[in-house]
Image 1 (cartoon, rainbow, N blue to C red):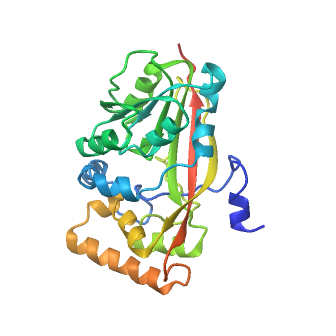
Image 2: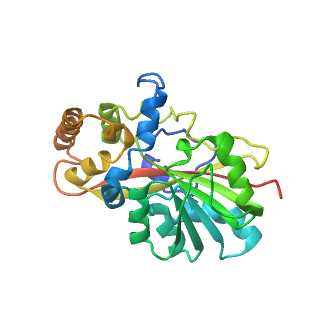
Length: 286
């Protein structure tokens, strides 16, 4: 069975190989630097329009699986909080599925893109550590590409506070599928990860007494790209956003050279293969 055939199945089992992702330190990168980490966490707003244009969305199957526990408890149409909603990539998927969505985002630039792109959602300024909603007000909380930036000791109790009894929490991450050779090489050059077996420890939903044990599943996804659009996507990741202009130009030049040398990517459009990983759990309080 080929790699693609395996990915084409339903959610992968919990013992499937872990995959790391872009915006997360790896063992090959310098030791944890809290100042640099804070810069990375707040680096997206200045490039909000590019983020909205170039970052991938989320497959409907992954979003549906993320919400499944809440739907079993509350019914087909949910009150959903998209926390750290960014420019609304996940928010748009939730609205398309027919749910009532509140999107909370702290960054002014990202929030402006969110309001413009997904006006159907209720937009609020706030953070995971201070959610601007009353107690027991939503059926589900979802987090796209952002849970690793949270302070879990403050965020998880706050998430539990706004969830109704039996409500669910789900975190989703899109990560390039580096079981594909050229994608693995792209990651090595950009120093964004080591290999798919080295999923970073922070990229998970932590065990917490307010929530049930975490379930995990992976979903195949893809994004149609050209060399230029893929480089634009790469430039929206935090490890790129904090580079000095000369360093960024040098890094993008190396990536362009790789893509131009590979038959899969050298000419015209190609598919960037993606794995969407979902972690979900259910509140045990209330």
